[in-house]
Image (cartoon, helix red, strand yellow):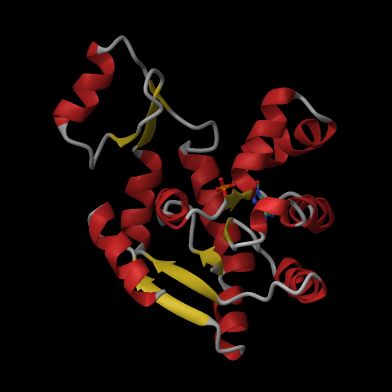
Length: 212
Ligand code: AMP
């Protein structure tokens, strides 16, 4: 299975990709996670990406294409991959296609995780991670017990640096301007599949695996 997960920030791509990875045993390649890890370790890429990420804008296509090319050449992608957060621009999509053709691993499909804008805002504004367990939580959607469990275990509810209102607005605008056009790009190529990504995580996962 070689797929791209498309969707706005907060559409649940990362969560669903993680589960697909565990059940299908193929790597989940998230460019956002790769960049966050570069920022954390203070590499040259991390230093360059940090400010851009905090503003909600996009890191340059050239840097991203280089990063993904290196990753896709690793051995664990032999049996497939799930791309999450890449491509994000038409240039990235076109370069990805060329790269995948060159290495003879063409894409099976691009799956759009479809969520209403109002729900997206709540998912992003409310998103937290428990500092002790790493569990993803949401102050609007998680149960009181789940939130209390984190606090009672001595944890804190951490917010991603780019999950503040201003950056969220920027990220959604950037998505609409630069990434949404990829929906028609893959539609024209007859590679697009659409999943209703609203509702409980298990329901969405079921819809996703049905469509794949
Ligand atoms: P994400 O975790 O996918 O929401 O990504 C977090 C941030 O990393 C984005 O807001 C961008 O600044 C940057 N980023 C991740 N993937 C890409 C990409 N394919 N192209 C450009 N910037 C990216």
